[in-house]
Amino acid sequence: MKGLALPPRVALAQRPTPLQYLPRATERWGCGKRLWIKRDDLTGCLLSGNKVRKLEFIIAHALAEGYDTLITCGGLQSNHCRATAFAAAQAGLSAHLVLRGDTPLTGQGNYLLGQLAGATINCYPKSHYVAELPALLEAWRVHYAERGKKALVIPTGGSDGLGIWGYIAACEELREDLARADIESAHLVTATGSGGTQAGLTLGTALHALPLTVWGVNVCDDEAYFLNKVATDVADWRSRFPGQPAATVTPRVIDGYVGAGYGVASPEVLRVIADLAALEGVLLDPVYTGKAFHGLVKELPTGRFDDQRDIIFLHSGGVFGVFPQADQFGFLHTAASG
Ligand SMILES: *Cc1c(COP(=O)(O)O)cnc(C)c1O
Image (cartoon, rainbow, N blue to C red):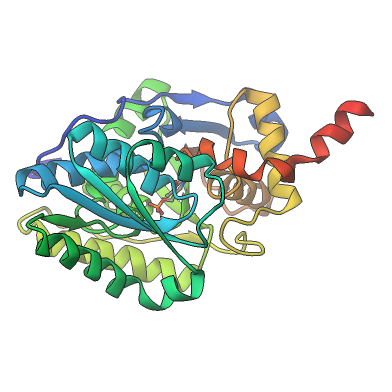
């Protein structure tokens, strides 16, 4: 790719992550296709998953512009908020998390980790959060400004024209993965929640002319929402980084696997998480990757991917989301005693 000029980036992620073949999953679910997994759950431990790739560019921007505080938002168990809290601590910045949900009596999972990383946390009941989020973020920004501090507001999931650089840049890595694994062309499937990963991959594959067809399996909202969100993030990228090469972006969404709602996994999703863990030693999460992988498994027999021999699933992380839902995995005890 000529002319793509990456903005400043701080090294936070362990890169490159492995592209791993899944022989037993291929046999079980592949329907004649080869299944691969891009291990972005291995970008780090606390700084893990897809969010850390975005944060490399967001933190670099914050440091360059003299911000001392990062304000961001998400669900109580947000992976993005946890990763932001740890990235801030590593960079010597303060983090302030604005979370959706009632303040828990005891912290667990990502919420607990955010506390341990020293983030200031405010929880808002869901209706208040949904109705008021932009005003809440702005009020906190002003709060810091009045105290002589400079706070950067990072949008949900770090998904905007800056954050999507994470997966535009990851496409360079994917090009090498394809060459090394001798994959001519493939479908690339990711969970999509705030759209930035999908936007970065969709734009990045176009800019790098990679032989990949990118699909987002939405874990909330619907197809129309994500078609629009990807277009919005790409437009924001264009306006913030003028002079980048042209590319035609065609977002693709696999809708129909949200189930009962964001963060709520059906028994089938929980089952596929346990099955993949036992088959391949790869652990998915109930909020994002488990739902998306379940969608992939369901779509494979429908012929949606029949023009390619290879499927790459992006493991975008989320391991800490397993433990707050431990009681959902009760079926495992039944199996063990039987
Ligand atoms: C945030 C997240 C996603 C979704 O990525 P977006 O860029 O927000 O769409 C997928 N998987 C995991 C584990 C996440 O934390």
